[in-house]
Each structure stands twice: as structure tokens, then as C-alpha cells.
Length: 170
Image 1 (cartoon, rainbow, N blue to C red):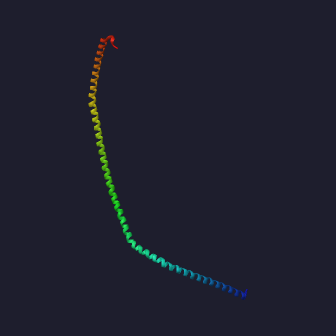
Image 2: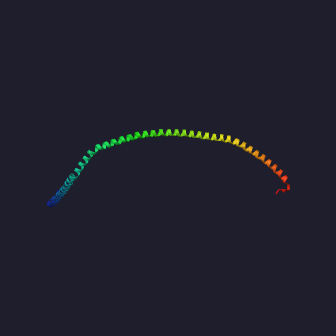
Image 3: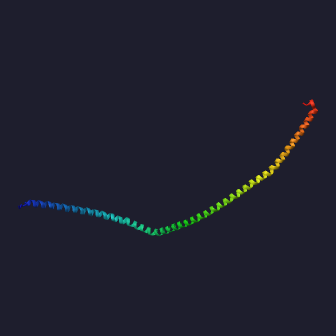
């Protein structure tokens, strides 16, 4: 079984393969030109970036170098202020506690003084009232007795006058 393949098949196969290889070469050549164009645009963008971004980065770096020590000082100052505030707030809280204790003691003392004064005034009032009301009652009783005596005497005089007047009383 030995078959012989006609020559035209070999020629056709070779021609098709050659056309395929040529197409591949053209595609690769198109890719080369596309990459070259992209590389050219990339170079333009890179140049513009170098023109604009690099000076900006240099300025930012210079600014950072200039500001960095100031930030360190500001941070240190803020830390010191925070510690001072903490210390002072503790001191003020202690002073306020002491002041509050003293105010409480003085308030209690004032309350005791006022209570004692009011108790003394109440006692003195009761004593004066007893001292005055006893004699006043006695004087009132004496006056009531005198009035009763005078009333009795007046009634006797009226009866005596009435009897002396007799029927002439109008």
C-alpha cells in the first residue's frame, strides 16, 4: 500500500503554509508598528510626567523636609500641653474637693449655729410668754374682781335712787 501523493497537493500545502506564514509575519509586523506607536505615545507621556510630576515631587519633598522638624516640635508641644493639662486638672480637682469639704463643714457649722439660735429664741419667747402671761392673768383677774365689785356697788346705788325716786322715774 504504497500510495503516492500527487505533487499538486504538496504545492498547494506549501503555498497555503507560505500564505499562513506571510500572514503571521504581517500580523507580527502590524504588532511591531502598533507597539512602536504606543511606545512613542508612552515616551511622550513619560516626558510630560518628567516635566510636571518630577518638579512637583521635588517641591513636595522640599516642603516635607522643611515642615518635618516643625511637625516634630508641634507634636512635642502638644504632648507637653496634654501632660500639663492632665497635671493641672488633677490639681484643680484636688483643690475643688478640698473646697467642697470645707464648704460642707462650714455649712454644717452654720446649720448648728442657726439651730441653736432658733432654739434659744424659742426658749426665750416661751419664758417671756410665761413671765408676762402669769402676771397679766393675775392683773386681769384683779380687774375682773374690781369690775364685779363696782357693778355690785352701782346696782345698789341704782336701787337706792330708784326707790327714792319712786314713781317719778321716767
